[in-house]
Length: 479
Image (cartoon, rainbow, N blue to C red; front, side, top):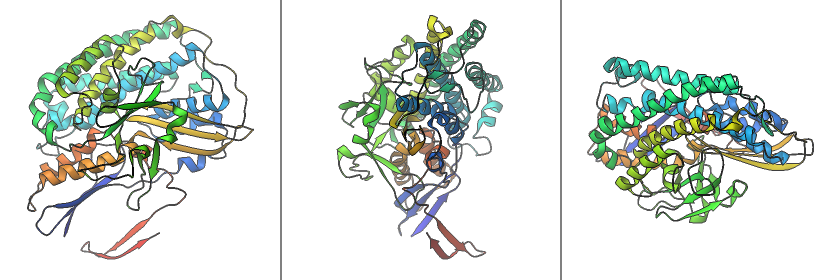
């Protein structure tokens, strides 16, 4: 038995490693993705006033703070029993879509794109954003400009580009002025042109070259979870949750009822839980017959929605479905779906900025503390994000549970890693290109591991390996 270790997994947010166990013939016996961080946000949020949660939870992550900000605000709305006024709700959605623009540009160009632009077999020294910039300086400059512009849009709407504090229980704290709207409108037009360029560039110059890889690498069959509006259209800020089976049939449910569907499993080799759909049976990650496994994030949302409300993104959805069906199961299609969403958000920002309500002055309603439970769900760029708060009569948190997108993709990422490793490694033969392709499966999900690692049912599992100077394990201690 031999163990291959990929550490760290590169071009993702947070720290992870992959271990691949080879049998005596050099073929894959097992493969796992281990998440190496532990953070206890759920525990130290207990005892805090619920109105502080939209500010506290943005600190979970500097990459996707907007998602936690809005999920916390929505959960607090539910605790207080209030509904934000139209302007407050639309400002939240505008901030969310602007944050999507920045984050999808970040992932496609800075993190995942090098595998396709430079090639999965390119030397690691150029298989990165600097390699892309070196190979195409004009594109590199444009990418940096557009990502920076996305951050400036968030700053204009929320007052801060990172760790926003604008959404509050009952609405939004900061009205949008007409001057700010005009500034954002010009930036939004440029973002739309860049989104149109990006999806055309990918469809013409990138995806066709790697279609064989897309059809084979890390392929698994699962269910999907995402958010749709009352008409079944894609919605990233609010709506009903749609849980789709691998065969395409689905159930819709309200945010407050998520526990009727989702359970979380704790294992002894990861700091991240394994959520699964308990209605589908006893959880299993068997590649041939997985049970309870569902996926979130871009591909999931594209699968579960019936349509997209903006015209350009709807046209892309129709083309995508004509090529890959519904639900599409190929893991690397997450990248294609991500670019459809980039286009959708660029269109949606323009729609919201042209809505008369967006510069209204009634942005929030008053709130009064009470003992209650509130669930807030938004679609983070990485998938469905759940904040679940319970408070006492003074509005102080007595319980807090966060189920983030990356956690919900944990089972799928592990299955995908094993599928890829099993297909690529035969008779003990492997190289850097093969190991990078295993990493590519993980990068497709754009995991945010700082968000994913939280309290493990009140205990901290620790494993300590004591090694000698040659790296051989002398002893192992566990908690």
